[in-house]
Figure 1 (cartoon, one colour):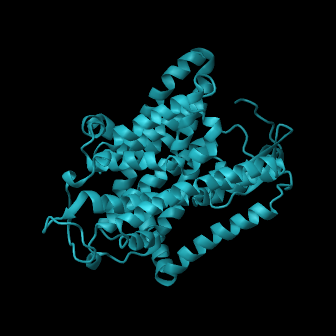
Figure 2 (cartoon, helix red, strand yellow):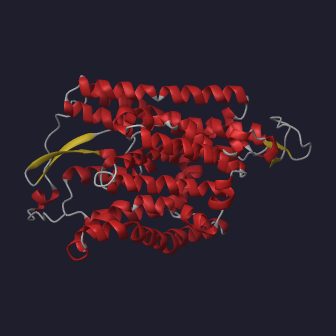
Length: 445
């Protein structure tokens, strides 16, 4: 599975190219905006694969919050650092952003598409919570919601047949047409303010990507049934009887063996010849599920030349480890360079040097911050050190394990319904924090 880190970095760098180079260089870079969903389908695949390959009699009952905490130990330190850096670099922090800050700290900012209006330099702007403070980090909030549901979903999918999983993937892909219809309704029928709320609901909440995450889980089940065998009998996997699995590359069909090459080749052709504007909401909300699954399954099987010669190289394995850190800090590094280096370096020099500066920054943060914190946490776990957070989560998990999942679903569904039908976005215009404290505005970008 180590080869799957490189596609994650490739997805990350495509999004970076879209954010900072598309408008000034090549509109085809706009296709990079569609690769945030790759994080969801890849997370569903890897985590459910880990769950479904455990023998049923050895599956450990782990409380929901303890499971989520194990996921967050690796990624939350970098996320928290990115919030601090963005707040330090912001010239103006609106009152709306201060309201959103607790949700950002708890990774709940993308659970509801709340939009408030704020005043910046006498101009009224709309601030939607999923994109507040660190606008690129909303995907982490969506992942948190999916992690709450991962183990129950994986437990259910491990009983499904290969045919049933293929049908589920097809239905998930077809469902991607629904956001496209909602987008048309949003722009043609709704007033602009309400459209902003619905836009956030579709593009930056768990509702808009749940089918993508489910497709990743179905893909993991197909991989197990297609490319793996019972290690003792060397025969097909039999649920409830197979105790240990092993990879049998010869059993995988050709289109999976070479899935990386096929998937990326088709994607490049589409990006070159298909205008992104015509299919944006379809591909952005799951239209690339088949191609992304081809890439994931091809990398997992490990026969694909792209996997053998590129993804498993030490260089790309190192890049894969910094993919999340790179993604979370892309805007901070760009804004920092624009603010402090633009006058001396010039725009072209910044455009050329930015990717390398971002890589070096991500490597530094990953090595000296993320890794150090993760090792410290694992050392505490090995010594069974129970701090305040561990004791609190254990107390909640013991009493309300199933209630956590039910309440999470209720918040998403009911909150989305209320937001769409009652949020006219005619909110009170909120002053900036500078207006409240009487501090003069800093207009420096």
